[in-house]
Image (cartoon, rainbow, N blue to C red; front, side, top):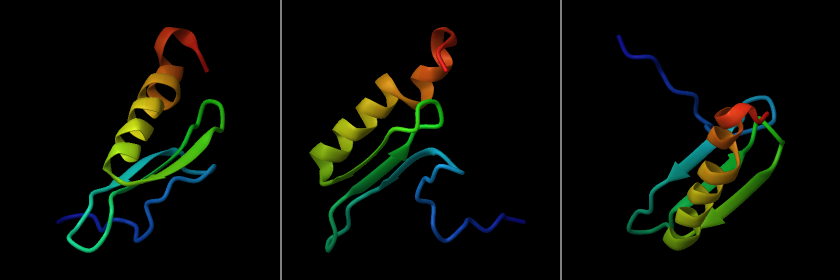
Length: 71
């Protein structure tokens, strides 16, 4: 049996992380993050901006806080 996903996966302070939604024929791609390590948050629309948002999150937030003992 498959687990039903929550209807709203937007990151919050209580549930930090990264959310990316791909574009469709009628909408642009979207992304959001809230960092559980430092509390930073950001939002982006459009492929290029969402790509930059994911790179920022990966390099400076979420996973970066787990590397090298940073928290």
